[in-house]
Image (tube, rainbow, N blue to C red; front, side, top):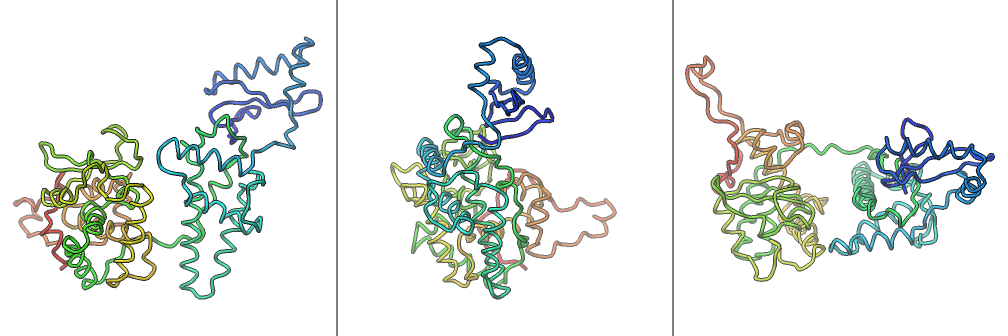
Length: 408
């Protein structure tokens, strides 16, 4: 499994288990401490190293059988990794994750020059492999505009490739695979990442998008569900694909949606956050509820729901005038538009809560474009004699009429 060195040079991790490395009869020996806690592993490692210096024949024989030169590690192959990855996704009921796996193969291509990577060692998962891929993608672009798209493609592909090695997936691989140190492969920075700060879109485009988006209620209910999820709820594409009816409800404070990314989430514990919505939005969402379908979007599979958002809905956005580069980021464009409106009308605290950012600073940095100029304070308000208009109001939802009003 992947190695993680501690400050104790003879100890390192493979997955969750600590291993001890030491010299014995001129060779490097690696042994498992069978411990997951560092303090316990140090005690066991000390015992192992002391035993290695004893003259007990049984111990010497056991250590000789367990030793393995560090210079020739026996890493698993990509065929082994693919089988483990498929079993991980099948276990969690998400499918086989072909998009992430294909992205990983695409990253390897400039280094190995072949599509079939099955027999190759996982030792290829190095920093140099990533850098070779990034350089290859960007170098083939000719114009400045093409280079922008190439950088975006390289960063997106790397993010998908790294999804094969999430913490949860690595725990599933434990005892199934022998992985190299993945630090270099997973930590290479994005290549000349473009700014993702939201910029105000032309008023005409915003008005047209909202008007035609509302008309989808009568012409294409599947796309209208996407519009409600992406715009009124401000969800990311994968959150829309995973959204369940069980997460929509009403309490003493009004209608709200509990949002989670993982499909096996069953309750408030582990929720990614709460989005307050108006009763009108909730009713329009439930108009399209299909018997027997636990998910808000209609397709039966996660892949079908995700493609509905990232492909069909993105194609609709391009057809009404959005940039041709709007592909999988279509839902995020509407999320940023709604984020800027929450920011303008209700302030950064409410916007950050509804967008479920880890920090208000993220909201202020990337969603800080005001829809319209704020109303000025009167002199009495500035002098403290008159209360200012309310700013951040917890669990407040924008009515659909208010959402529809274009920026001033």
